[in-house]
Structures are given as structure tokens and as C-alpha cells.
Length: 146
Image (cartoon, rainbow, N blue to C red):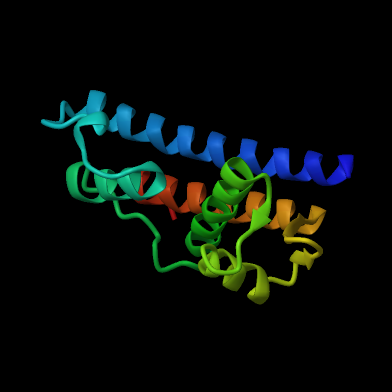
């Protein structure tokens, strides 16, 4: 049981650090470009708010069409199950997350008295790879480097 808690904790930390990275990117552009709107004044939550702020306020293209962005969003959705439901999936309330698990080769679920999410080591590495890919694409979009 402890190794699973450890992997779930890694996922929580990764998503939190990535959201902080996006927050700092938004704050940096606000400072650098003296934008008329700060992130906290922009509507929305988490990566969706940061994505919209970067696109609409800072004029930075976010690679939302990339597979890596989709994995970041899925990681956020799985993170929410861990943070708010201790990794337990309700078959009615969490159909979106159950679909994420079903299509993933590196996430599993097991049904006992309730459905338990299993985060694997491979899934952690895939999330790191996806976040790194998004960060590199954002870097290219902000600096013009190819």
C-alpha cells in the first residue's frame, strides 16, 4: 500500500509544480510586458486559466492540440481524484476519470468494495515527459527558438 501512496504523492507534486510553473510564466509575462490584467483577475482555475491567460492576454500560443497537453490535463483530472477522493473512483461521478484510466496503458483501477486507482511508475514518467514537452514548446513559442 505504501508504494501506491508514494506514486500518488509524486503525481500530486508533479501537477502542483507544473501549475506553479505556468503561474510563474504568466506572472513573468505580466511583469515583462506590463499587461493590463494579472492572472488572479482572470477567470477560471488551474491549467485552463493559465492556458487562456497565456493565449488571450500574453499572446503566447499554448500547444493544446499536442498529445502532451492532453496528458497534462488528464494528469490534473487524476490528481483531483487523488486529492479529493484518496484515489477512489465513483463509477457514476467519475466517468471522465474512469475513461482516462481505461484508455491508459500505465494507469489501472481495481474494484473491491469500491474502485481504487493505481498509479504506476510508468505513468509518473509519462507525465514528466508530457510536462517537459509542453514546457519546451512554450519556450519555443516565447523565444522564437526552433
